[in-house]
Image (cartoon, rainbow, N blue to C red; front, side, top):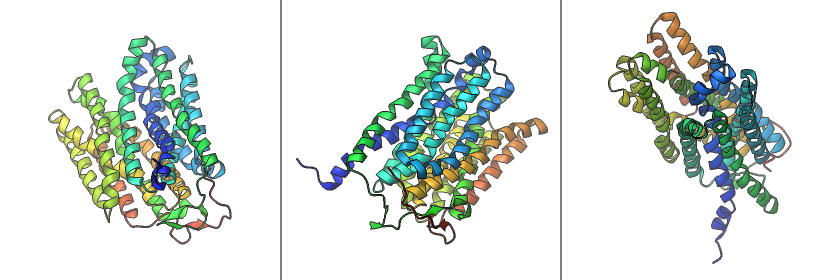
Length: 419
């Protein structure tokens, strides 16, 4: 039976859909698969407190740097070529750091790995907008869910894989295979694009939009608002990933229980990842959803501070559900842009500055704790992070797009290069 045009178009995007989901699944593996193995990696390579702390800071710092660089690469090379480059960097970095014998080389190759994933972070939202403008909510829900699954999967299976093979290096290298699989659907999709090229001019409300001009995000309130929102959200998440186990251990919980609480926090990103993209686009004011998830964050922070050893599970559940604000941030990269290029610029700028601002939070959390001799001032920092996040939420609540505001766009005569 012949396919109708919409179904025919959808069939032609299966490769892109698989590629987006597989890329999302692999994005966090390089970050969260290593910490559980540090007990084995550290003594062999010579990690100390400083190098361990440096490793923890690499992800947000490298994500920030490549968040700002990637929109330019997208304009030069196109979305698909940037994604292929990102995957190749990630695979090479992971494979090579599995064979090194010293800390410096491991850290350098981690930078290369994270550079690939940093580019992948930025390129995913515009890929969704390019291939699935008619299914934005559903596809975003799917890929944010894959992010959550990958965040849970890598630390969950890294140690068992290492134990089964008797070598942490095999476990590290195995995650490179997951990244390599991403290449398969995208090679197929690129070949299809050459035979059936997609139009360069984006559609806005079903009408052909003007050719995309060069966008200056530094002058855009939307871009600044999303960067501020993402910084406040990510700062809280990084603090929990870094400090939740040692904090709970200090409060009297055993190491295994503290680790389980972190795993619970991570996996709770899954249900909210499914909910946010399906719910938020229906809201006239997205800040309503932000306030709901902010309430969860507040309940989690207060419970964790006031009664960490009692009802710990409940407080972790509240904080974990608060991660819905991250899903909102990813969704806004497409809801607050009109073109694939605009989405790429918004994703790169907001993630670049957002991760840069969030990178310092776990470090300050520990410094403040040591300086004050207690956790009160450190938890007060989380309150400041909430205020920062809400400030950004107010800035992106209106229906403005990054391309809309006069003065945001400079004339730049070439068409967006999407292939």
